[in-house]
Image 1 (tube, one colour):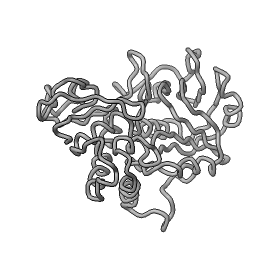
Image 2: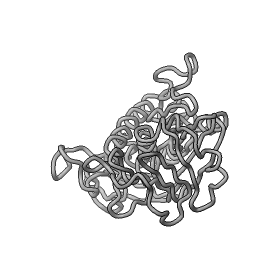
Image 3: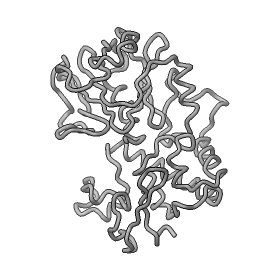
Length: 311
């Protein structure tokens, strides 16, 4: 499932290439026909993200809310004025890139004939975006979209509030409140921290990869109850989530290892096999202590950790 950094990259791409433009919206697949008809011909005013939710605010107080789920992805293209990633989400096909290459994707202003089950298609004068495989694709009022956002925990990437284009007003949130709120939610429950980090009402945007890597980097046993962490360790975990997920937005990849471990040095991103400390390294030697990385099921998801470094 795409994690929070990818959804913020989506919001940034929509902001860069579609916000301020009047869009033709359709549903080639047909499943989103009624919603597309509501948005067709309206100006896209704002694109924002919170956790794994993407909010596209259109004129007239309507919001297109999308959750990609396990299989959702957006594909993009356009004419010579359009520059951006060709695909963001999962899974991507061979040749599609989340990072713009040589100025980005430049095809034709007219989108190609729909391939596969295109749930929603957004078309501007210079580009297009196709949505496939999303678990949620719905049109809501601003109030309904805000209600979804408010049920989520704090986002380390600090997404803007849908319908407003900014964080909540003065007196409603203060700098640092998100980290403090995360620590409060995390440390009030005896549930294992590995499970808490995957609960979107505790923290929004962290998925299986960041969960494993953040706990390793913090040297926290995944089975530790939230109540045993303490405010200082929870605050440190939040700060590392902010830093590593921000790098993910910048790089278009989840890379959590120290550049000293990269074969080609720090000037280029590492090969996938060098990008993580424990994720998908079951049975391999821990990069720090040499102990075999462990694997277990936690709430239906695979959990990786080093039993020595995280004891």
